[in-house]
Image 1 (tube, rainbow over the protein chains, first blue to last red):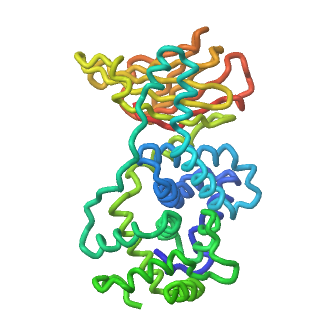
Image 2 (tube, rainbow over the protein chains, first blue to last red):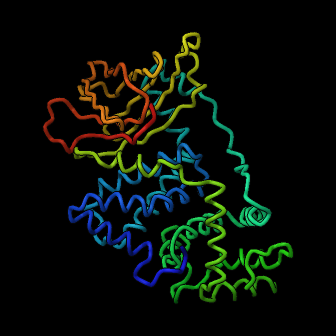
Image 3 (tube, rainbow over the protein chains, first blue to last red):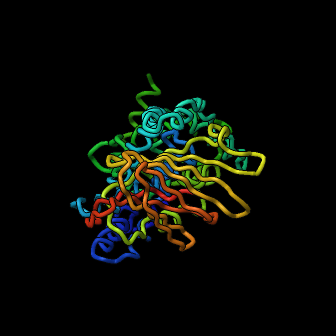
Length: 206
Length: 171
């Protein structure tokens, strides 16, 4: 729930605590961390246009890399940033490079591999066709689709965190929202503006 | 122009409750439109509960089912799926085929063809281990449906830290 927890009880803070506990030998704390942050990673990776099946693989791979590199993260409070940065980078790689990698892999395995390389490139995924709950949700969907890719990605991810985490997440996704205080930033401002100018939007009156 | 100025002004103000309410709606929107797969968290927890130390996580690439149709014998209901795993140390190509009701086999091929001990850890709790032959080939037979994770370890290398592990994938 956004903004309903006192400071210090934010997602990033709880994640930092769980990660510290895990590194101190508490195995169950890793499970807790996975539960806390997997939604954020999922939406980060899907927000980059990675298809759902590949997105599951990316999210899982990032967690395994964290397990492998956990000792090299100096400040446990930076675990959210580490994961988001890694997920975003890997999603980018997967969505743009998987074809080249397939061809390179195929070359290692001779004739059987050539069958792999002959796989046609899959067409771009169409925008998700979703059945939404009601008209309000459908209108929100349309407005969110009108945002720039970067803004849509940011808003989608911060919606799954707590308000005080916003600046950290924006920074981790490469979109810092300014150094003075938790300002709204252009992406949220844009969505507010778009919704405010939609006469049929009744979702939020400010 | 006016719009731009308003936007900049709006952007510079602190987050308020209206933002929070809007983000709540965005969250509900994505929960409906693109929810986190139900059992993903459980699968991730299993894949992380490895007893072994590892050096590298292989990248997994799925080859679309229809692409390898030439090798699947459709008349007997054989399903063939191919995955590739790439790491700095090795590359593996793995094919999963259905050999009967609830029965699968996994055939793999490693490059470079060195002696690797190949371990298959199933979410069901089953564990299997084989050694790849001199061509780098290995196989597991009579497997059940479910999710599994492979690890590769050089034979005769006692340094456990040299293992390569894969993400969990569906068999």
